Length: 255
Image 1: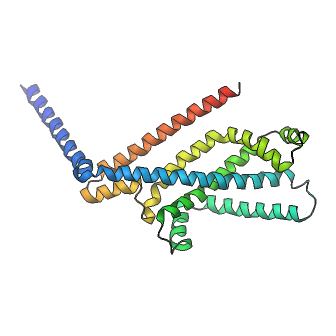
Image 2: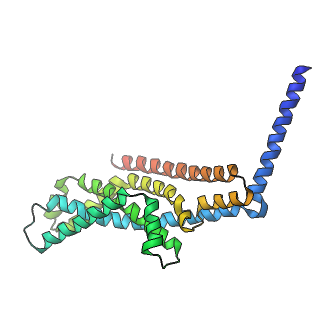
Image 3: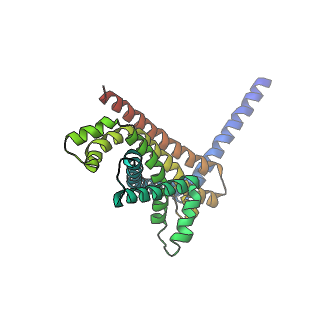
């Protein structure tokens, strides 16, 4: 008799929890099509990440070439304008790397929005530039390590083919370095996806902001925030799997 009463109470508790879950799910995602806040936010997050990655790679490659060129040939260069310019640009790049890597990305985003582009109303462009410049500093060090890992014999091979230093970098060194650092660049892309979660600071309705909007409508924090976390987790797992496959193929291609 006692066991049957206990079992009935457990069933009632489970039914009550299921009904409460259904009600919360409907309230947070179905009613008034609130799930669209998450979908639109996800699309915005992916757009910002994609264009920021392009800017980051462009800046990072240029910065890496300047830094690695300075480290490799500065001692061999004769005094003159070319040596002065290389030292000058190397100093600029070092300042850029030090400042960007030494300050929080959220502070950089706020400075871009409230100080540098205070007169602009294009929050998306500002966010793309802020995240792109931030990513460029990390891509630069990733790519520089790839260039420095290439054996100096490759430079000699380029010169034996009649290439100058720039041609050797473009046709021989950079393709090999890019292949070596591709998995690390893919991981930087994954990190950048999560960093864009602070876009709401400048009024962009990204994925995180979308969950926060739902929370403000329903006064329920658990479901929208857990949903946002799960979406980020799925994205990261997906791209991590892609990086693993990429690394495996690169290893197989070297055999």
